[in-house]
Length: 114
Image 1 (spheres, helix red, strand yellow):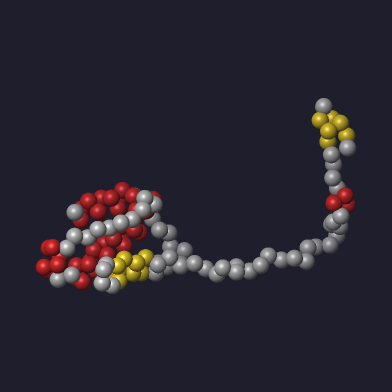
Image 2 (tube, one colour):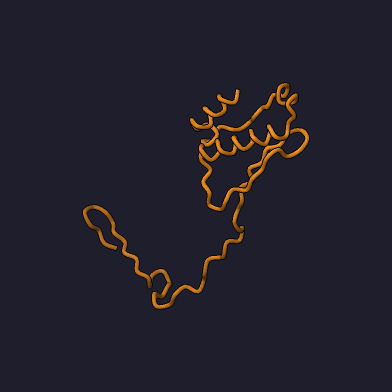
């Protein structure tokens, strides 16, 4: 311990902590115990699943990606519903305010669908 410029400086060496620098650590990190995660994009109605897709691994969920999913969902709804149902069925889309959901391309596309 030494006093320099009004401060007390404490110098610790490896020997003071009980660790010998000659020996390497024998512990190793655990492998990924949780495995990889997948994101399932799925939309359904009262009857069954309308559209779903598993994104590719490491694919980024951006506003453009979400808009593309909404386009495919719209196509799937048109294929599923008859002409009569298309005229008389109102689709309600509920989502949170996550960045991809409120991105400008998504808002523009949703306004176009109204």
